[in-house]
Image (cartoon, rainbow over all chains, first blue to last red; front, side, top):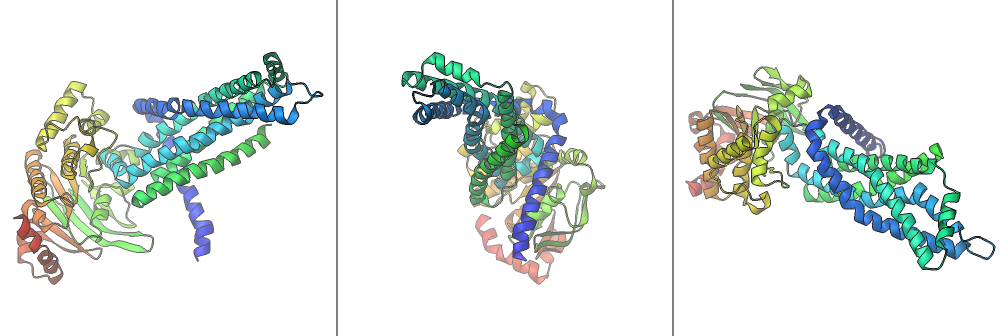
Length: 253
Length: 248
């Protein structure tokens, strides 16, 4: 029955293979010292090299939030400090993590899937296994660990740059004086907010890297398969970021 | 010694191997021949445990490799060197780094010792000067030779060749055949060559195993192959005769 295969068997098979891949990955954590160089390489590729685009997107997100807040809310009856009260929590609670997540789903997720997918279709993964190496430990674990470690760093950067961007546009655009912006940002600051953002960034980092590794590792079908895996890695990561965002907000806020 | 014992394998609804048995004798070069899509490469992947049969077993030195812990399987795999069809060189590494990779991963040699060993391996495949080149800068034949250098870096007991001459011109194919023969002699390894190239088979193999329609159809020495009157085997060999004439 094709409908049973499409709706039940194939999704169940995908979940099963994803879980098995994660099980194999965590089972190799004891070999971490031998993957040290690989982990640092991936931290640079995933984290440091993504810094400029994440900072750029965050700066513009903060700036646009400031302009829109000014457009919608500023009137003689509302203090201009409201702009700081909107921009800072928005960046810390939502935009910092989500903007970073979306950018990295495209930049990092697609790259991971393309790298592993190409290695699969050109038998490089088989070559690793045939040598006696654990390919999951060598290829998947460093990427996932690098993602989990570097995403929070990128989140902090995005939040800081986003708030700074909003502040700069607010002050230079004449929407809000610096002191008012800072006072507004501090007024509604909750110590749990950045912790919530960090938790989200950890979850997003794990989600994007594991989904992309899964899509790449199980690629089949030559160049077309690599293209399909790359697209699916980016799209699926974005969808699961949105789902995880909602679930975390409901559970923790 | 490797024993393939009645293995059966399907992918989805497609049965690829049916009750295939084969004995790979120590020190010999065994060619597994057959038409494209007959299941030769699938058989090779079973021999190193990259695929698990639905039925049957593969014994390497008496150990059933499909029913041992993964860590033990990995140890057994270090006794194998594998030359994949496309070379499967790591394209992010130079030729030198590709050959050095198994040495860095599985031995405690110093950088100087590794450099010496890589040099020796590249000499053996007659490419002493390509260490600094990336795989993309090499021709198909050179990629296969560098991949062969990587396969022999750990001095394996068994070398598996998956279609070593496919896609190569006749002269380069002859060079690869010569390398396979000389490595078998120099390193005293047991070789398994998956191929449909009868010229290779006649020039390098001690024994041949013919897979037809997913079944092991015929096994014997090269002399027995010449003397065989089996129609299916003769048809396959005869279809290669023109190619043999071109390369001789």
